[in-house]
Image (tube, rainbow, N blue to C red; front, side, top):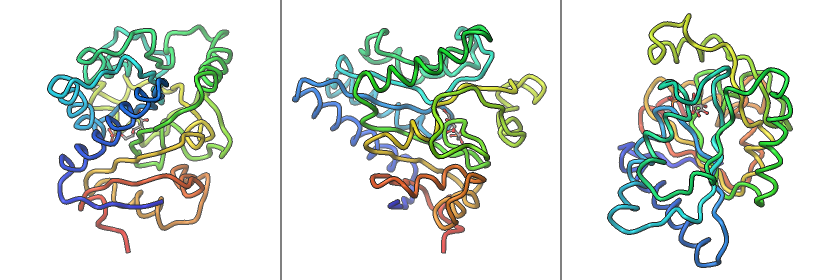
Length: 248
Ligand code: F6R
């Protein structure tokens, strides 16, 4: 893992967006699709804003891009404003020229009996297009990446999981109370994330400082799933001063 510490999360996000834009252009010049793994939440918002700007002002096309989002609440209707489907359209997809058929987000509305197969299909679809070229991550205070909560296995794939209490507390404001936060979610696995050729994790603010210290400096453990990133040879943590304040 490399860490890069920035004074300003906006400036950092612009650099991450530029890396993604360069990858999209490079793949386009090779006539290959660019396969992006994307995250929701507060951390990547500025990256998406900058990608939209590059699309509008510099003509970057996403026609060649195929996306796979990390996760979705379960159960969750995609029309619900709390869905990650809604979030991604609001913050990115509605403002760029990506083809709707190239957008993949776990289906939060699948029936209980089709859930297992839909997770297998998601995993197979990522493999079928050649795997993730780039995976963008945030980190939860439990040490989750995607919704891989403590206890997740190194080789886990896309699956249905139970959200940690702390994760539900952190999501409560968006749902106007913890009682409204779903108890479950569908998430790509640790194995899915680690199969990406390149991983960038974003961490902003002092409330991420403690978990980032455990993630970067601690032993690799299923109790802090983000520590599994220490196994990956092309991962960069892009963090601001607040988030880096506990690092030795
Ligand atoms: C979201 C996701 C989560 C978030 C994490 C941090 O798709 O996979 O792991 O990245 O919960 O959330 P924020 O960025 O809101 O602090």
